[in-house]
Length: 171
Image (cartoon, rainbow, N blue to C red; front, side, top):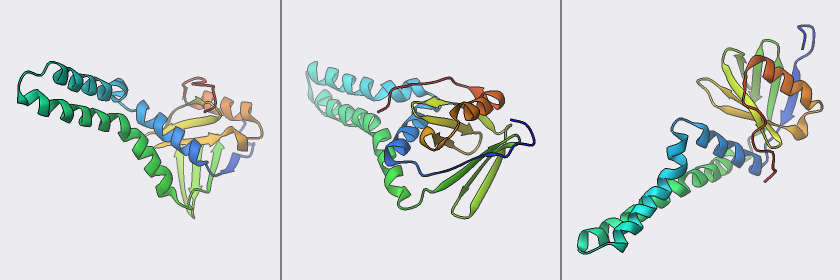
C-alpha cells in the first residue's frame, strides 16, 4: 500500500455468530488464558473428588459448592458472549478504514483512529481478520465484506505482529 492509495474501507455488521466467536477468542486470548481454559474443569473435578472421598459433613457441603463454582468458570465466557450479542441490539453497523497511518473505526457518528503503534497484533480466525488495539479492544473484519483479502492481510502483516492463520474451520 503506497501513500497515494486510498484507505481500504469496509462497511460491515458482524453476524451474531461472528460476534460470539470474536468475543470468545478475545476472552481466551487475555492474560492467564491457560487458567481461563482449565480452572473451571479442575475445580469441578476437585468437587467430585471431595464427594467421592467424603467421610464427614464438610466434603458433602464443599463438594457441591466446588462443582457449582467450577461450572460458573466454564459457563461464564459463554454467558458473557451471549450477553454481548444481546446487548448489541440494533447497533452494530461499523465502518473500518485501514490506511498507511493506521486503522479508523466509525460507528453511529463516532470515529476513533488508531496509529499502527496502537494496533499491537493481528491474525486470521477462520473467515475473520482480527486485530487488537492496545488500551481499547479487539476488532474483526469478516472476509465476506473484503473484495481483496490478500491486500488486507498484507497491510496487517506489514504493520503488526501477525499471529498467523489461526483456526481455519468455519463453525
